Figure 1: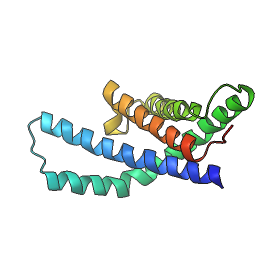
Figure 2 (figure 1 turned 90 degrees about the vertical axis):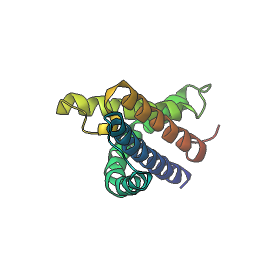
Figure 3 (figure 1 turned 180 degrees about the horizontal axis):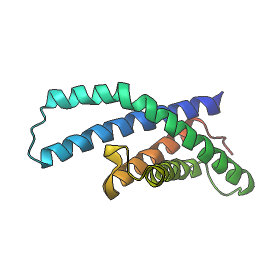
Length: 142
């Protein structure tokens, strides 16, 4: 039950924070082009993306985390000195791999906030945060 709770929390945190990063990056690009984006519009868009983008992205995150956390768990089983924070690295690696795979298969990044080096880095960092959440709440303690 602990692993399931940790996994669900990790996916929710990653999807929600990534959704906010996505929205704020798009708004930053609009502002850089001279468009005014009022604070109320920013808040509304964040809420809209949390309801629209985050659930779909959560399914993608869950698939990546399932593989990454399983591999991290196997590594920890055989490498006794590796701590549970290996899952944080696995979370970041899962998101980076997923973004690069989508870009390769589709020929472009379909997630506007994850475009360019900064966007990929931010989404990867959020994946690392999600992995840390799993390490804290779901990973087996040794």
